Amino acid sequence: MTAVPQEMTAVAAPPGSGLPHLAASPGFASGPYPLLVLGVSVLALALAVWGGHAWRGGRADRAALVDRLAGDFGGGPRESAFAGLDRRVRRYAWGQRLAGRLAATGTNLTPGQFTAAAVGVVLVAWVLAAAVLAPFFGPIAALIAGWSAYSFLEWRRRVRTERFIAQLPELARVLANATQAGLALRTAVSMAAEELDAPAGEELKQVADAMAVGHSIEDALAELQQRLPSRELVVLVSTLVLSSRAGGSVVESLRNLTVTLEERKETRREIRTQMSQVTVTAYAVPVIGIGSLLLLNQIMPGSLSAMTGSTVGRICVLVALGLYVVGFALIRRMSRIDV
Image (cartoon, rainbow, N blue to C red; front, top):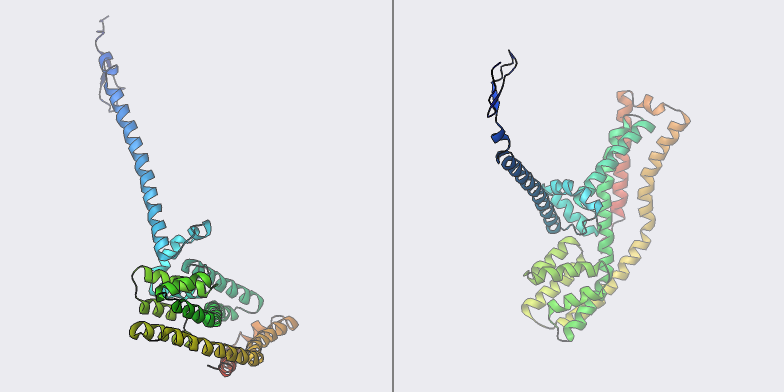
């Protein structure tokens, strides 16, 4: 037998395996190379973990900064769930307009949350109308649901504007007292923001914050006028702007304006009381129409499906719905009196 040297042991590969002959030496196996490879691998793994953690932290900080700049304060789980959708909605022009409308309503909803809720309401209305009435009424119910979501924003904005108008006499009185005490108009606005309740306090705080970062009084009050448009606010803003530009007796102007605003508030209250019956009638007319459809379908099940199964039936239903819409619009227009 041939002696095998102890310095090197040849390991033969199986025939046909295509693997080269490997040679191993005790000196190579016990050298520093395995430890070096192991150390480099551990270092690379540690750097990868640290890099992934830093990347996630950077993305979280960027998202939080974007939310703060966009006006989404709070950062709770409800906001974070819609943060991605909210950023996508704000990229479009209609999303920015929606954000302005939501800010004017005083709600905590973000554009992403409102969009998701509106889409959900539209889909639910479509499915319910198609299941309860007939498939033909699904798209009609979806359109009504979308209009209702838009009307909800307008209603909230109108309610907030009415509450702000009701606080205008007190606001003018506070500004007059602060100006008479020798305070500047900027300081008077900040003091009024602290003393008045919402929504006047919240809106004036935004005006004070805008002036604190360098906006002029005219620009800050113009933004307030865009958020809450009303004739009373236009008069107040015009008085403050003209007084700050040309000087004059700001105190006397504000005191006269306070009396005028009190009289207008009483007049608006009387008109709203007298027109309340007409307003209820405007909403009762379409409710009666929808109720009659539900009653007809309950008395004769399947009658709505049979009626909307033909072209003549669909045309009659659309004409009837159009007449209800026209009646609602006319009654609302007659009950709207600008003071």
